Image (tube, rainbow, N blue to C red; front, side):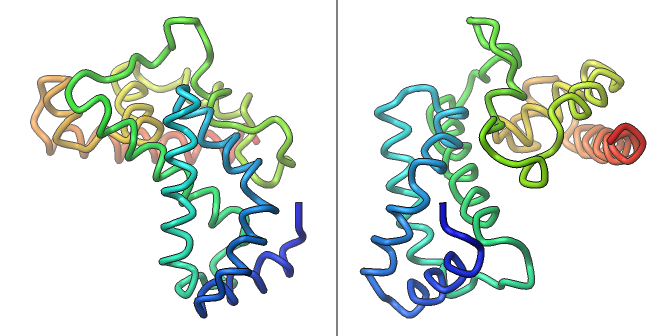
Length: 185
């Protein structure tokens, strides 16, 4: 994997419309981004489509990348995750995926790449500990919203609550998670 300076340079070149720089960026980052996507979208064929969609978005948005806003690979991961979540949302458009997969896989593990360093992602154990401390419905709401891509409206329908109640649940749960992660981490 390339260092941050190389990725920043490539993103700047891609932002100026350099297709060769995009090809080089793809070669350097696609294996890791594919791993991120595959943790969200289990179907390998669909994950490959999401990867291509992510690089199309990177091509379109590279000019807006601001190095002061964060590390380049994290920016790329955010695009890949968002595209994968959007794909799940389109695919499931109605019935949600369950928080625990049918095969018993931990959804937190699904979102994390064991090859990334500790600074790239939240500590899995701390996150799991803090999520367990939330009220079950609030925890489910947070997981569905931020890991599965559910909108507030979809959550309101799923939990048979008003949208404003869902907003309150999310706000309180995220505040509790933040406080917890500051003490647990």
